[in-house]
Length: 221
Image (cartoon, rainbow, N blue to C red):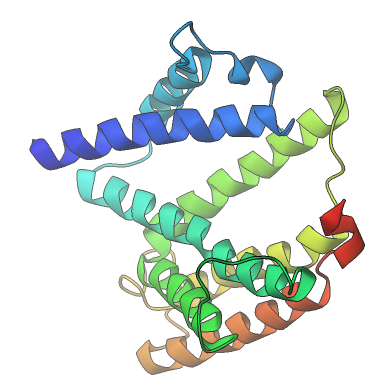
């Protein structure tokens, strides 16, 4: 009771702040950024609770919901190492109180680890995850077409590596043997090969993402 209750409280506040920040960045409806007199993003909080209740519907067990949340959280962390590697090249002279050693080694391993954890979550969880992401992309597209004062999306710098990354992970999960072959996945990629295939995807996406990063002038602006 304590563990899921505690997790629920954390995610309730976290997701409301994420949608609030998206609205502040003009990537979501402006209403989500409205707050009460005490600074609580009430609209975002309500939206998060409603969406959270809807997400319960396709999951027959608590274990699968936990797997979905874990996979989604790790996937969201996966972009962090890419951002770090790109910023090091874009703003090499920026003041950094903390400096991470070993150049691209740690960011690459972090990206690889996040991809492996998503792969290990299994196809019965991941197909729901990638379907949810697909719905998110549709909503983003609708907002971009209908919203006002939208910031530039820089599609080339983003979609060029994000789409191959997500599509590749989805395909590998479908072809993999997690949790067990026959649960919608084919089991074509065995246990050992999974490490290598995910490693190849990680390396390809990492190189592409660094190559298409925004120029220094645009970042400084």
